[in-house]
Image (tube, rainbow, N blue to C red):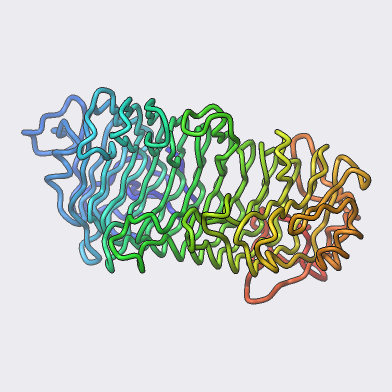
Length: 512
């Protein structure tokens, strides 16, 4: 079981113990620093007619969930549990959470082979209108369908609820083999389906989500009335659609005023090997984002590593007249993507857009390896009043640095203090502004009235092959950025050091 800095798992009697807690033990972390009132056990050799003690465990996780009360812990021992688990009850602030956790060091597997999908959409573990619940350390796998009317989910949180922690689980091989964009599956899904009551104070940390066949869906998404949440330290990889999504305006919440993932943080995640190419819902298109905010607002995306995906980070909305707004994408590293490193604006004239978003202090290197022409940073439809500063944009051989190909808004973004470089050299570099192409930084500045303080120079990365995208001494990135104010640059660089060290902020994700 992986441990998460600052979020030590609940079924740990001390910082060094690997035992599930006994009644009265002191436990640490997860926001719930109190001992369990009772600790119950589940094991494949158990009996649901037993008392649930360590010596007489229950046999099924669902029976344990049905028996426990607020403040109790369920300790799941090694084995394969071929069952659906529904948590429709809550812990409390006074007594403590309900904890469902694998015993540390033991492989507790919930396996969905052959199981039904109730109501057309369900999870191997499903939380319904639950609050004060921890789910930690489980392996969830092998939940699949061939039907476009069925949606399998690894872990599903739905309804409304507060103080939920999803920590250190491994979710994999959730699949739909149905065809077209009616086909859907999710590794982890959170749907805020009530209003005004929301899903709030949610922490999803340290999980691994991988090897998914998703149809038109996301590996991991928050949708509807979900607020005040943190997605941190997760590893999302090898899936045929979007990695992490924060979504709005899909009709998930019954009141449109609340139908928007908001006030959240996506930080310190690693997302890689995500592509929709060959996905039957998309065909041969490089359309899957590593991180996607689709109609969300007031979201911070920082210190993530995204590589070998289609689009690294996309901020947009798929719904006409709606926007993704007030999102800050900062101190991220995005490299080796199939298409653009960062994309702003809707993918077509008939969808929504992006406004008042900030792209600050990121390092974008050799994206668009498939030659789509979208470059390191792309701006599409209905983008306005965005900010792009302090970024390193290092293009591959195609040389496309900025591709703002539509002219539907007067000022898609303000650019300055960015550092540009290209494998193609100055002669092969290109920028596009509101549909007009420019083949030099000077021409770009004149034609766009942008980037007055931005150089074209080699950033002097320590190692482009490994890669190690810190910069060497003498780099033109050092002390060459500008603090945009209002806390937009954040306190930490990609590596967790101070965001400002020296005379001024550095350009790019790393502060030297």
